[in-house]
Image (cartoon, rainbow, N blue to C red; front, side):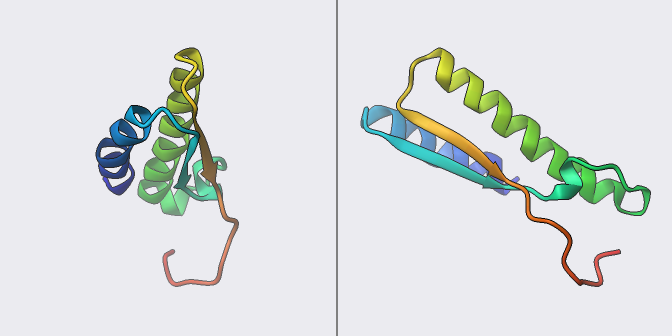
Length: 81
């Protein structure tokens, strides 16, 4: 829920300033590639990707001066699986 809370807390202020700004959300390559053992993790990361893409398009359609990117880091050694 961190991405949603961050957008809810900061985006209205960014838009109200009518200045250039940028939202950078962090997901994972797991949000782009299916791999069964990590399904719950993948679902959350895919949601961040989808939310970021949707927010990007919504802001662009409004001609807002705020952009959106989503960072999807690759695999790292961890015990998550």
